[in-house]
Length: 185
Length: 210
Image (cartoon, rainbow over all chains, first blue to last red; front, side, top):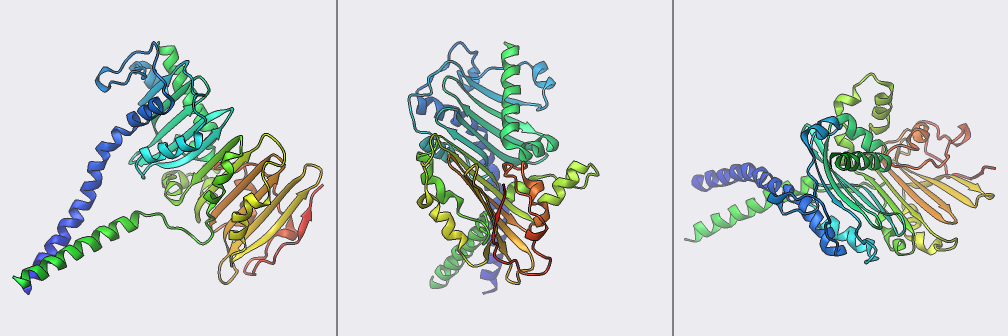
């Protein structure tokens, strides 16, 4: 009997150690989420890249690679950006379904801060999550002819700005990153 | 042999309990003042644009404590507003034409607002602009404090539902407008509308604004 109690305690301890480490394993999955979102857009809207440099190692034909100088000049240190230029996003009038698919693609620890779904104005989605010292923000913008997928890390002050005015700050961040990408090329 | 089986079963049960408890702590709590705002989702097919802003408890907690202790008046404002809040949810629909939505479309929200604890605090009717803003409060069991708030703003071509969950100082309501995705609805409760501290709120009578 004493032996089984010891076993029970041992298993309990192991579980307390393993449950968080299982979550850590999930963190590696999170790195692929950005690329999965890009792929979702490509497959859902049947859109393709055009004339944009490749990130060969990630097989992402839509992503522009920004120089270190440009990234340093911006308020967010590092970011990933995929740009869809001159594509037709009007082929499917299914923003309700797309929103659902997008949400399914992302892990539950991403919170949907903002979702703007418009028939004329296009769609904008902002997802956020805590990443320790900084905050991860994933912005998906789909207009009639263009689209972007942007992942940035924000510091505390910038993150609070985003929470205070999600719609305007989402636009500001996305514009800033897109402008930097265009100037860099 | 039987003893081993028994021990194994115990171990499995314990494992399930621990995993379950671990997942449960991560699940989002649903507070009584939290409306099922997603019940309005069927209206999305009729709308020209839908805007959702969701600041759940997890997100509100992300607002850095360091910044909340700052002496900056703006940061102090955030601290005041955020303290006690459990969630801020906004859903806005814009329609191309008048009459594209009706009472039936918002019935699901009205039903929730008839639940115990909710009282209509103020109803602002602007006949000129055909605008109707209703503010509902959820009070605690003693009625001494506001634990949730809902705003239903209906215009001919626009519908906005705001749901603020948590302890709210009603005097700060106007400060929240334009913050955290809450649109500026022009709500400024005058002294007559303010519920007195430590007294249960009375159901509101319709207040008209020019």
